[in-house]
Length: 351
Ligand SMILES: *Cc1c(COP(=O)(O)O)cnc(C)c1O
Image 1 (cartoon, helix red, strand yellow):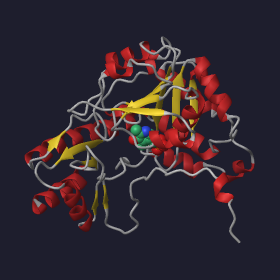
Image 2 (cartoon, rainbow, N blue to C red):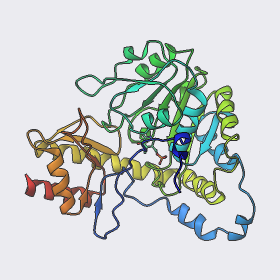
Image 3 (cartoon, rainbow, N blue to C red):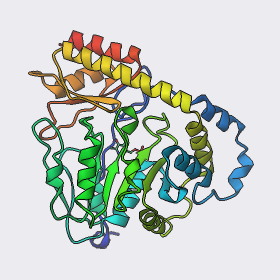
Image 4 (cartoon, rainbow, N blue to C red):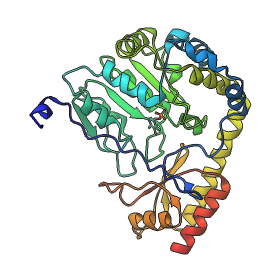
């Protein structure tokens, strides 16, 4: 039997993540995962984990993980919030901080989850165009708003906005919360975490998914003033107290403590990125200046959509959006040197 129940249902158009192809032999450069495994300390922690511990509920605040993060970032533990990947942290932050009648602001080209969260929570939003070089102009964010969210480095462009420019946006908006989404900050940019003591309205969000090779573990975090973090925690505890499972907390801590491995893998990614940008330019692409673990490249005069399909036929997955302003670009995640060389070989053949 079918009635009118759909009239009272929340309907949304969901976010579409990149494909996760199941066949073997695929070179996967489409969702900005790290090509290197997590720290060996994570494997060790997993193999030593006693399943009996799963009988009990996890620590509600991921205390040990929060302490180590506070320590490494130079903030107080009360300034740290931990969630199930930064998507969970961002979603909670939208729900908590964007509760105004005025529209929130974010760039027209950015992480495509922002408008989805705004829609599901009924938050008004206004997108502001990037300039012709895909850059953010801080002056655009100095107008009335109910909040601001900026990915820095931005996605899918990879372009990093200097810390002074970021600070000018935060300073100009003391009456609203400014969220800086730093999913890719470890690949070259300077973090805004150090500004959280100076600006009570700043929330900085980071993740273990990219620079710590732990997308499958789902760990994200936010840093802010104590008052801001308290607001976020209050909303979180009003939805679900036990978001972070015990295994994630333990593995996250293990990864965090292996600073040497973190430094080694992230500098490796940065050097493969620089090599790859040069190779793409040789192949005739224009490439934005990326501070992330991906490149945003346009095959001047050739169809990006067609290249995307032809690479896919060769089992090389990159990301392409059939959307205005960016449909002439591909977003290519930085893989291992071998994977990138396979990509360049395929591209030279196709071109
Ligand atoms: C990947 C990504 C995230 C989400 O990462 P999680 O896996 O949920 O931690 C958030 N913001 C941006 C800009 C991203 O690219």
